[in-house]
Amino acid sequence: MHIFLDESGKPEVFSAKGVNLVANGAATKHLVIAAVKTTDHLSLQQGVTEFKNGLLKDPAICKELSADYALDSFHANHDKEIIRRAFYEYISGLKGIEVHVIVVEKTSCTETLQRNPLTMYGLMSGLLLQGMAHQDNQAEIIFSRQDKRKQFKEQLELEVERIREYYWAKHKRPPEGINLRYQHNPHYSHAGLQIADYVAFATFRHFETNDSKYLASIQGNVRHIYHFNNKEHFTRSRPLKLS
Image 1 (cartoon, rainbow, N blue to C red):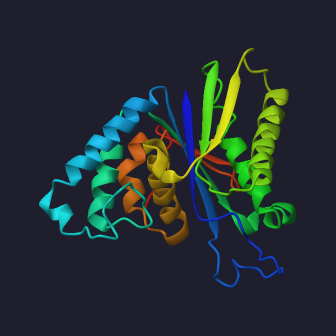
Image 2 (image 1 turned 60 degrees about the vertical axis):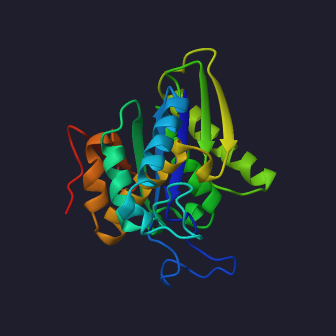
């Protein structure tokens, strides 16, 4: 089993000098993390690669491409609108994945979280993963955050593990023999990360700018959205209301 995580928005609230970046409009109000789980990551990669290759044969798509934008991978924040629409349509009908999302309004968090972006990111990732990573004896967790510092990666993994352990201490213990492995890869390295990026972007646009068109197109394939501050759970049977 593989679980791919990517975010939209950043966890930072304050600058290194203590300036409130959110209040100054220099940082986003929300952080959204999406997780995409699959038991067959190779088929997922193959399917997205074939879909991308099909787009590259579409004359309407080719008109949008250039030497500095050749669609080497999908990235929602940078992709052309025609490509966004096509990939969201693809995601909406995609089988064999399980999608979960967590949303946080950063300035409504505790002072500790606001001043520690790594802790905020780790906490939200841990909450997102706590019920997802125990259906198989082997699970690989792939983060898209690219920070080459070993200390950063280790701290993120420790924070995720802390939240998971806290959850299972309060509930039941996970099955014996669970082996979790963590990786930190660029988003273009796997289709799972690119799908997570698109899901996070769609959810972020809904909460940050009240633009729901992307989320509306894939809502049927999103199993669970959790709003951290409001403690609200949105599912297929109790969907998030979109504008």
